[in-house]
Length: 406
Length: 68
Image (cartoon, rainbow over all chains, first blue to last red; front, top):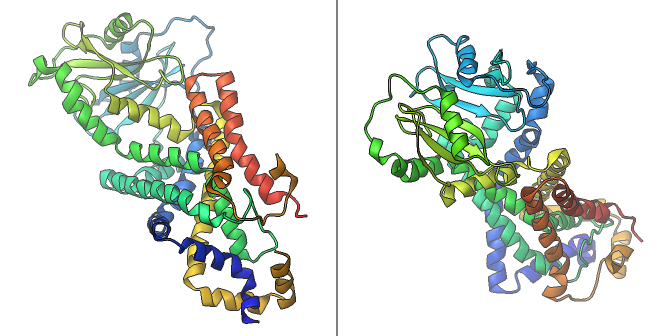
């Protein structure tokens, strides 16, 4: 009778028996359990903060006033870049431009990233938006108080800088381990069940197990790809360092130890030279001499292509800031390209609004996977308690009947 | 498509191949969906949406379909 009362949890017991059946499987189960336990709380946080980040453009647009750039007929010539930068700097006396950003999503606005000095930490930079066609200053919102900024910081480093990033990266690796070991332990769990089995008339623990198995196996590829590309993104600072000491140092070896020139070539000229050198690409990003992404003596103009892939793979053209001549331009090394390509695969921002919505739903289902996994672990730790509850709350007659039909 | 006919969930012992046929298919389609929107716009995006919508639809289908 006692066993029959427990019949509701028989499935789990059976699964556990099967899982415990062979030694390698038991080991996989151990891996699945512990990799999950360690990362679950952080993964829940990442899934929850990541959800609004999928729509950060839309949310910012909704919550914050933005001055729109003027609407112009196609083919309208663009304003002089130096004029645009000067107009931005007029609002920030005594400060300097470090970067220019040509936003793919907002081609009519140029962003000027302004620091207190050329070597100051770009993290503290302010962004000024300028109209691309009229060179008029638009606005320079302080984003640090925004909801999306809070989410972004929690999501990327928990306000703990590089150590925070690397820690979350480690959690991401554990998550990937949990997904892969989850595939292995899925098999014994499904020995006697059809694909997609959901035993909705069974006790909660069985239903949660079914949901966990179903959602987990359906989302394997997505969770692995988004999880691992997230891990790669946590290494962005390290990848940048590698590039600085590798390819960038090689390209600027002759100029090593030089000071920043006192008189710079106009940035308009530098971008023009880069565009002539790489005519099939568009400028995406300009790094002023002395900043993070270039040498003391070069403008680095990063060019992008126009397909979804090539628009992510930036190619730098180094322009001598004194002579205004192109000195070198190379494709980025594989580790930078990997980082660039891992970004869209993590953000889900490469297939329009429908893909973003799909990304959001998959993110929510991932939360379900994490939640049910946590539930199963907490329940299995106290088998006696859950058995008592099942016995106390359920009608023995009903459970017995089920045991017979199943 | 026998699986869509709401068969009894319990079945006789299944082989690894049987267990992983559907997951493998869905995994391959998800990969196609993840990559195709990177390759191009327009049609490529459409392929991506459909392929990545599949696991969502299956999830809803299996959880919501009426029990026999």
